[in-house]
Length: 326
Image 1 (cartoon, rainbow, N blue to C red):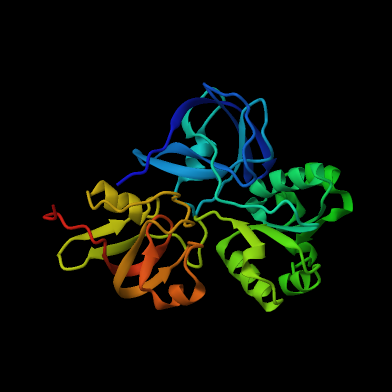
Image 2 (tube, rainbow, N blue to C red):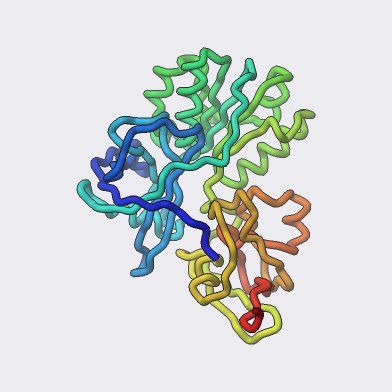
């Protein structure tokens, strides 16, 4: 089953190098009105990987731009192929994209905001910083990168935030201490986070360790990151001899649906949990890349979000799809 997505044709207007490994793309839909969109919004982009049509999701950079949608893509050789496709495009290329949508909720009534970004996770945080500065809110941005050379939008953010931007560059010994950061925040502070899965797990543990309600830690995700390298794995269907190989460039959700097993989905970002299916057996290890399940549920390995999570080895699942059901 597929939820309806509204796609529109668009043109890649221009690209811009933000760092040796990050490129910005300005995309102009054919029907574009420049309307504002919520902080944390993303668009889906139709890509082609190994001759197969796929979909990739990218956060929009900054608030609405009258020139089109801006996204930034990090070139990752260990990715599932979306970044390689995007980096192969030249200005003038035609694309199909969706309209912006967001699952991120921001309470704009707080007095204190802490923004935390890890690497390419800065993309949705730029718009949050702009919106908070425009509201004259108390905001600080902590930006963790390998080096300042890798820090996309650092000049823009420095001009926007001044000394309220704190860059934590690993090659300068500037490790981000999330425990100390969250413990020092005012009691009413709201944190907005975007970064790789390991960093998000650390942020949630530090936030709870500081005695703060988890509802006050809001986050954007990018489901391509996980604890294990992205590699092919196998999926068996319960009660049958059917088995699929999930290649590194495709998700389990896409492979199962292409084979007619009708796994429902919505966000395809590991946030809504609609595509969660039962895990019957694990011969290897599951790499939970979603933010829907709790740490305890992930340890139990009884369910998996088919849209983003992966595995090493072979897992047996029950999609609950029955070909003979009426």
